[in-house]
Structures are given as C-alpha cells and as structure tokens.
Amino acid sequence: MAEAKPGLRKPVFTKVEQLRPGTSGHTLTVKVVNTKMVMQKGRPDGPQSRQMRIAESLVGDETGMIIFTARNDQGIHVM
Image (cartoon, rainbow, N blue to C red):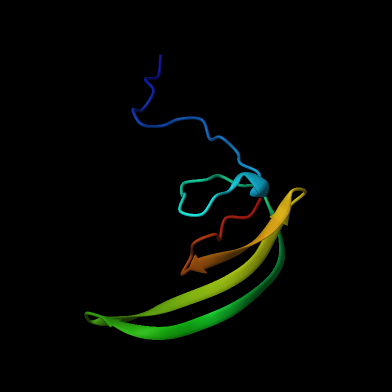
C-alpha cells in the first residue's frame, strides 16, 4: 500500500466573500474577467538575465470579485 506523504492535505476551497485582509494560503476557483500586465522588466541574475513580470487580474465567483496580483508564472495553471 502506498504511504501518504506528510504535510499533504486535501484542499479546502474558499469563496471570494470569505476572504479577509491579511490572510493567505487560500484555494479559490474563480473566473478571470480581465488581465493586464503592470510591469515587465529584465533583471540580472548571474550569467543569465531573467524576466520579472507582474500582472493584475480581475477575478471572481458568484459571491464577489477581487484583484489578483500574479508574479512571474504564478496563477498560470488554468483548468
């Protein structure tokens, strides 16, 4: 029988209306309404240069909408 990995737990999904300032680690299922790139620039990282990107997206569910700020590849997983 496969052994469960310690620290892994089933995700608990949160609705937008349940979010509170200063909290983190939420799992949401939302629809992206609009997205815009707010900053994109290269930064030196040793021998290779690396791009830094920041985008803001208006996202929401049936309970409300929020601005989601994504850095680099954060939020890239779409179902």
